[in-house]
Amino acid sequence: MDSQRVNEAGSGMTGSARIRRILILGGTAEARRLSETLADRPDLAVTLSLAGRTAEPAPQGAPVRSGGFGGAEGLARYLREQRIGVLIDATHPYAAVMSANAASAAKMAGVPLLALRRAAWQRQVGDDWREIDTLEAAVKALGEAPRRVFLALGRKELVPFAAAPQHFYLVRSVDPVDPPLAVPQASYITARGPFTEQADRALLENHAIEIVVAKNSGGDATYGKMAAARELRIPVIMLKRPALPEVTSVATVDEVVAWLDHAIAPSVARGV
Ligand SMILES: NC(=O)c1ccc[n+]([C@@H]2O[C@H](COP(=O)([O-])OP(=O)(O)OC[C@H]3O[C@@H](n4cnc5c(N)ncnc54)[C@H](OP(=O)(O)O)[C@@H]3O)[C@@H](O)[C@H]2O)c1
Image (cartoon, rainbow, N blue to C red; front, side, top):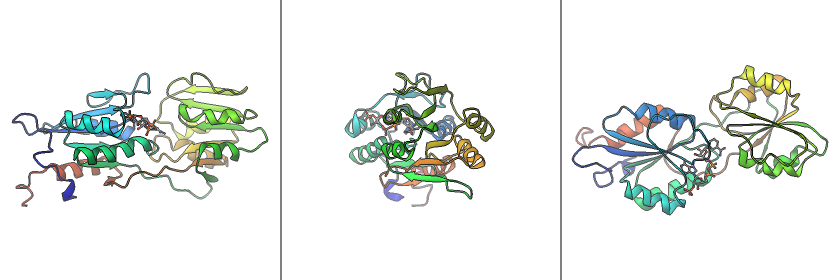
């Protein structure tokens, strides 16, 4: 961890005040909680970055900047210009492009990087999961016969399912799906998690869902549908997690705070 320690040159200190600038790449409940946790710290100036895809993002605990940086080079430039002292990648486990860019940019700008990565859900007794690598494989796995499918996916992941118009699709998303999926039978729900098992069970039952397509997001907020599918003995086609860069990682908000405290502690206080 010492190689990751924030030194004076890369600390992003503002004037004489020893305030470290922290950039959190967000778009997740953990990033929001982390920014809330760090918001009151007088020794930190936290900015939270969102991709800008959601029309009305949930309120965040820190000032927000929104929109892409322009690839890894753009992010590296931002880190230098804003004198960011620590970069925290708290994006969703399927946001693989942003995580790769974060790893490259941190290296280019010489800024310590910590990734906050949720643990994946583990298969429980009674789960009927079929793991696949791509959305196209998920479409294929639905089969030829018409089925009633719950697509627990993001808006940009729906398009491949137009290749299997024989199925009925139930889609739940934060913002409306526009344009809608090019299939004759689809139903749309706009809702923001967390979702309870009870509510998701009712959703699956009310729409007579026969199969779920989902990502292994981990965390509690969207686990309800997995538990409900197990209860109802509904199979799940699970898109495997993408490969992410090998960087220093922790799994919880508390561990980020502990890492930060260690990384920014003055060497004198640490007895070094
Ligand atoms: N993928 C999911 O399943 C999922 C689920 C829930 C929430 N989210 C959140 O939604 C956002 C987009 O996810 P994605 O899967 O579309 O990402 P992605 O494919 O990994 O990223 C595509 C591009 O979007 C921009 N971007 C992504 N996250 C950003 C952030 N936090 N701040 C600024 N720019 C960002 C970057 O543009 P530039 O190259 O121009 O910098 C990036 O190259 C992320 O913040 C993620 O945490 C994703």
